[in-house]
Length: 212
Image (tube, rainbow, N blue to C red; front, side):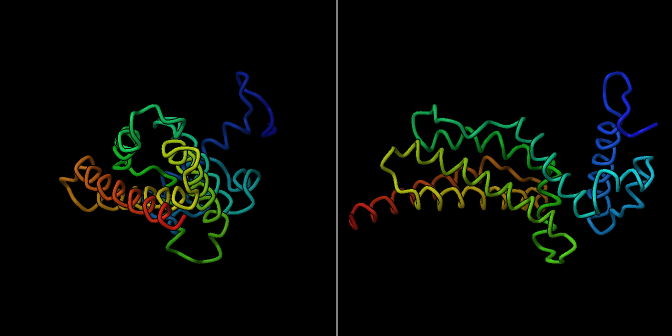
């Protein structure tokens, strides 16, 4: 049967692709990226290697798609960086980050694999690294827009971009902390971070005002 045939209205190609992505993600969690070989993915998914290569040119392309798919799924479960509806930027960040960071203890696949390919600079992971960096850029753009809306239409874009970078870096640090400390309480550290964030935003805004 052709990979493009349909069963119950769902293309077999889509079914097999989903099985491959799920198997690859599971193996990366269990064995790390290096241990998640095409042969292992084939065995775990129950599909021949030829089916994997029909969907993906190589292992790098496969894990780039795992990152993109995992991010899209995760994004649908957390609050969005849409127009601020809280009274203050502090309250808005507390609401969004409070909900988002609690999902990090489970380490979404896009973060687990993305952090690996960032630290491992081998060319064999170039596509996966590019996919993860694109996700970080997309997230940074969303947070930047959110911060600018909260600070007002005349707010400095560079300030908003720097604050967005601070938010992303803090979130990634929470990921590491959640894996190191058994009694990890993200809400406690979120309060400390928001105090630092408020100070940084205020200090930069005052400096920009004096310079202007």
